[in-house]
Image (cartoon, rainbow, N blue to C red):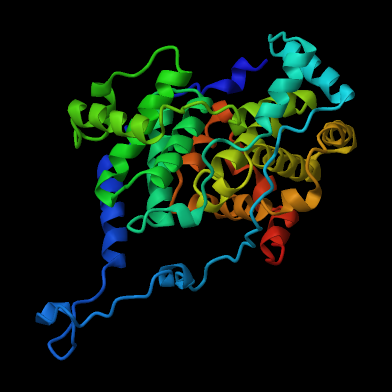
Length: 378
C-alpha cells in the first residue's frame, strides 16, 4: 500500500538545467549590488578611507531589512515552544501500533511511544529567515531548493532523502560561512550526504558532478563534504523528518490516497519557504494533512466526505490556531501553481504517477486557501 507513494516512479524527461540555476543566482546577486557612487559623493571609492563611520556595537541588531512591496503578508508567529516529546495517550499508542503493522513495521508499545515522542521534538538545528548568511537571500535559497527537487526526481531518490538534504543545507548555512558562489556546491553535497543516510544505492560523486554541468569536480564535492561534516559535527540524524510523521499520521487516520498525495504536495511546497523551517516538523506535517483534507472535503460527496472526516478526529495533536500559522505559506505556494517562479514541485506532482494532484481543480477553487491569504474567493 505504501510502496505506491514512497518513491517517485517516473524520471523527468530532461536533466535539470544547471545553467538556469547559475543565471538565476547571478541575477539575484546583481539586484543586491549598490549603484556606483558618483565623483561628487564622498566615500571609500574616492580614496577617503576614513569617511565611513564605524557603527556602535550592537547597532547591527537594530537594523531590519526593508519590506518588499507587493509581498504577501504572512503573519510570523513567535518562537515555537520546544516540544519535549509529549508522551502519547494509550488510545493513540494503540492506533500507532496498528498503523505500523499495516506499514509492515512491528514495534513494542514502549518503543512506539518513544518513536512518536522523538518525532515531535525539534531537530538539533533549528532555522529561520534571520539565520541566512548576509550574502544569501530567501529567493536564492528557494532557487537552489527548486533545482534540488529536480535533481532528486531525476535520480529517482526517496522522499526522505530530499527533506534530509534541505535540513542539512539549512543547518550548515546557520553553523558555517556560505557564499553565493558556494551555495550550489553546498546543496549537491548535502544531497550526497542524505543519500548516504537514506538510500540503499548511493549515487557516485561523478554522477552528481555531471548534474551540475561539471561546474564542480569530484575533489570539490569531497572537500565540501568534509566541511559540512565538520561544521555539523557529524550530526546527520533527522528523527523529526516531517515526511515520516506525515506517513504515520496518514495511516493512523486511514486517509485516502488522494489526501496523502495532496498533503505531500503541500509539505514539499513548504521547503521553498524559508520561514517554514521555523516550525516544528510535526506541525508542518499535520498542517499539510489537515489542509489536504479540507480541500478534498469540498469536492467529496456525502459518502466520501464522511470517510474524510473520520481521520481528523484522531489527529488533534495541535490546536487549529497553531496549524493556522502554517496555512498561509502553503496556501500562497499552492495558489501560485504554474505561475510561480519555482515550478519543480508543481511539475513533479502534475504527473500521472502522482495522480496529477497539483493540477486538481480543488486547489484553484478553494475558498479556504483564499481566506488563508485574506484574498476574495474566485
